[in-house]
Length: 126
Image 1 (cartoon, one colour):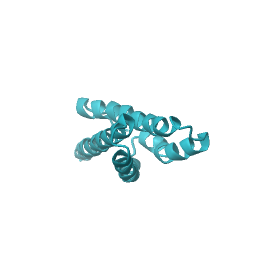
Image 2: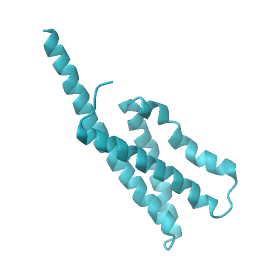
Image 3: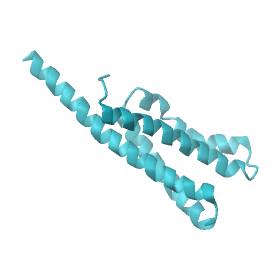
């Protein structure tokens, strides 16, 4: 694993913060209405599956996380329209948009860092 720059380090921490916030929002959204624990686990599992890959800084795993997040976004928008006065539902839409943007920016800038560090290693060998 190559070192992160200041920009990608900030995006890395923001990614984990908003990811945790989205998972907590999913739990709070349904736990308020007495949802069984099995439902709460099922809602969070697809997001939690990618933790090992993202922890290893695997950009492909992070790309797949963004694809899964789009399904959660569609569901959050439907929930926000069904309950327009529900702050938790509206927060879900906001948090998922922010998480998607942070993940996309991290993928972009981290990919550039990795490529430039790999190119510099190749140039050193020549």
